Length: 96
Image (cartoon, rainbow, N blue to C red):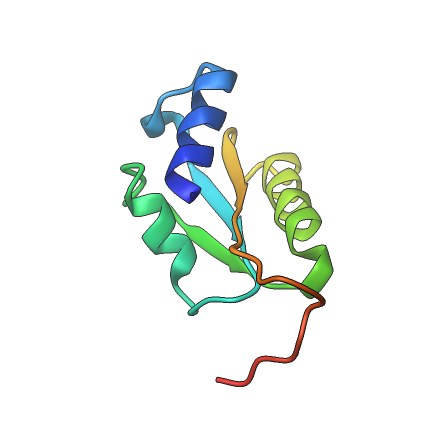
């Protein structure tokens, strides 16, 4: 899921993998390094990857973080990526 979304996003933007300098990856249900796992499939292995988990605001938080990294001059090209495999019905509490 993340591979397809990331690949299509790069194609749409006309970018290559090596132009991405940092990434903010959002997901709610997953282990702490799922962002790295997702982006390593794209070939993004030597950049900072920030894992974002902020409940229903996860996607917008990842996008906002990417915006701040660019505006703050820390990077010129940042990928914001989100993915999730939702269950049927309302969200429920998960305890690991």
